[in-house]
Amino acid sequence: MSHLTDDPQANYRLFIDEIKASGLVWGISTSEGWVVCDSEEYEETDVIPFWSSEADARAHCSGEWAEFEPQSITLDVFADRWLTGMVKDDVLAGPNWNEELAGLEVEPADLAKELLD
Image (cartoon, helix red, strand yellow):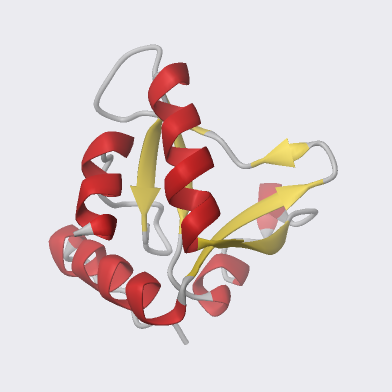
């Protein structure tokens, strides 16, 4: 059962706290790549959703994403490679989106700052 709520700010704080504690970030992918969603806030902008727990990532591996599997990324690799690349590619992060895929869309540089503080 997910511990995410309808409060995007609370889910974001949980994302930061749990990642700092575990050292792992979770996304969902196949051999062809990672899940990427259209931004709800910005036209022609992509968002990659990430979760702070494997269970919450796995909960999204159904329906149109049934072929996807949770994949972990170490915090170091996430901060150094992923977020840097996302800045270059103008892609946002979707931290701890809930079951309805609702949540914040965060600039990768802002997320990196928060994680490395």
